[in-house]
Structures are given as structure tokens and as C-alpha cells.
Amino acid sequence: MSDTTVKMKYLCKKCDECKHYKYKGTYNKKDFSFWYCNGNKDLVEKYDWRPHVKGKNTYIRLTSKYSTKVEGTDKLHGMFAEEGLEVDHINRNSRDNRLCNLRLVLPLMNQMNKGTEYHNVVKRANGRYVGHVTVNGKTYYTKQCKSPKEAMYEVERLQKTQMKISRRTVIKL
Image (cartoon, rainbow, N blue to C red; front, side, top):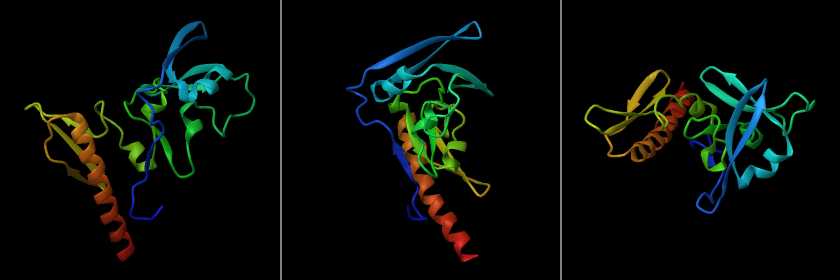
């Protein structure tokens, strides 16, 4: 990866063809569930899972009966991570572990994933959507867009642009 590119990789490219499943389980006498798909079906059905609450999110983890971690982690979504990248839930629902909802991103991009259904996108009072990116403490805004998807595209474009500028600035110092 060159130092001027923002790396992002979607984990599923067959969303239209893929079947989705709902895992239902009980942990500490409480029912819980999460979504998965054909892409991670074998992994989900091979192990037992439990919910793990972290702040507002409930992540899915291996039960304690597995003494070793699988693929270096005990979190379901983390089993798809690659070196230097984190797994991001696109719709911010930590119980939605369908591969079409997971993507690999730089840690900075994963930390910026807060707010609305789309990363760094907010709906304005006029009904239009605006995205924002913060780099080195400075916030940059996208143009106003008709849809949240369009605004998300603008956020990704802006992130690439600002990360290039940020890296050039650091190199010059």
C-alpha cells in the first residue's frame, strides 16, 4: 500500500446472490441473535457464540469453552481482518455480521464511524445530506447531496484527498 492511498476493501461481492441467516442463541439465560450469510456460514455454525456488550454495541464473540482464539481473535467480525486494517460494520449494527456489511478499513476510518446510518454523514434540516472528515484536528465538509449514499461516496473521496495532503504535510516537516 502506498503512503498516499486510503485502503478499503469490501468483504463480499455477491450480496444479491447470497442468503442471509439469523443465529439465535441463549447466554446467561438471555436470548440474543445476530445476522450472518453464506460467506461466513461455515464459521458461524462450527462454533458457539455469545454477546459481548461494549458501550452501545453488542459484538459477537466465541464462548469461553474455546480455549484458543480462531484466526487470532475471538470476535466474529475480527476473524476477517488483515494486517494493518480493521473490520468495519458498514451500517454500524455490530450484530449484523453478513459479509456485505463488513469491510476492511484503516483504523482511522473505523474510528470515524460514528453518527448516522452512514459513516460521517448527517441529514440537514433542508433534507439534504452532508458528510464530514476530520484530519489532524481540522474538519472538512462535503457538498450537500440528495441521498446518504451519495454523501458517503463524497466522504470517501474527501478522505482520500485529505489523507494525501496530510501525509505530504507530515513528510515536508
